[in-house]
Image (cartoon, rainbow, N blue to C red; front, side):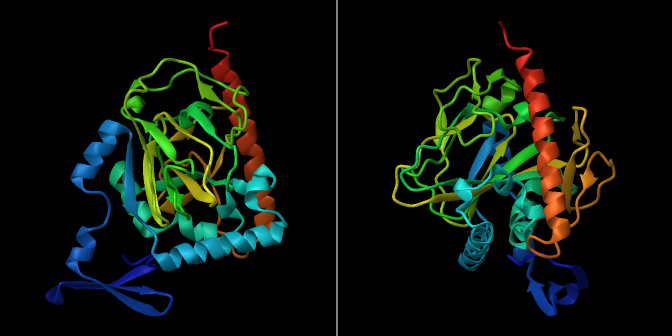
Length: 317
């Protein structure tokens, strides 16, 4: 699969080829390549029924190496492993670092997202979830939707693995069909060793009898709906578990809270104007990039905690 085309320069129908121009190089796609873009009808049907789908092949081995190199350079710049850094550095790195900006725009990932929500796509947030070897970090059963305040629920997360994610390393575990019930009650600040911002857990009953762990190889990704309940166990392996959660929404999605939120248009056009669209980073950790990253993280936390308070006001006494 060919990536990040700046523009189509021609369509040579008599040879049944499509040519693209990118960075001074001409790439050629055959009809077979074009037909492979996005999810199949069967994959879409399964996602709609289950609320998740995996594994999907996304990044090449070369790309995985490049993104891991970008991660290492980021850690070198901030002077500490990302897993132990200030939480702001694990959040919305795409506004600060070019390697993450490239990742969120990867055409294979966006093709899959487009299959589910159409051609106009916004990245609402990006977060690195890194569990060091033999670490205790977990996520309890929760829904991403609870504290975002986004409506409608046109919101799908691509969880991209940059390392092996096996049964020992604490993979995401999904409750099949749990998204169908919509928003459930959730309580914060109750889970020890949580890698989630609020240490949250779902306190309303749901069916845990049919769950599945998303085992992924480096470069593969899973998809899950924002209302799909999921959790993850500690990393018991001798290897780090490295993944980035890329949360995509359709452009018609809006924030129901009192804050106007920054976001990033990654494909298509924004005909609704519900978000403040952010520019791409021109340099890593540049002055403008640093200011925008800090501002986006600050308003994200304000909105997050506003939504948390609103949600918990509905909890039974």
